[in-house]
Length: 127
Figure 1 (cartoon, rainbow, N blue to C red):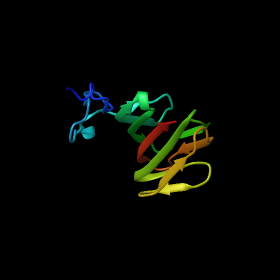
Figure 2: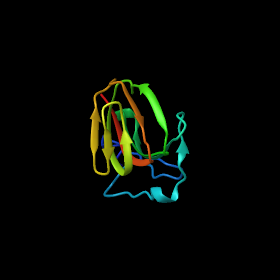
Figure 3: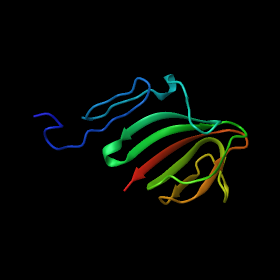
């Protein structure tokens, strides 16, 4: 019997050449070899790492160029978590530095940007 037949969830790690299929044990993805993908917001780039649309989950690296800024917005129905890996990142309330973590409630309005550039680990979860 396959993993899909057993009712276990199918997990997908997505990217340019990503790993897909059910996870048994560990699967690995070398994000460093992938190109950054421009988002709809100038100066914000992503490298998708993981996506499970049926469960409403996605994880990616985000690069924010120096001076980039996104006006106030929401992520409809999505809990947002971010961890600053490099540089600094700001929202309407504070500046986050390396190692700082932020968790935002679904639909929470916020701005975003970086004065000197940043790399973040970002995760979204839909209920």
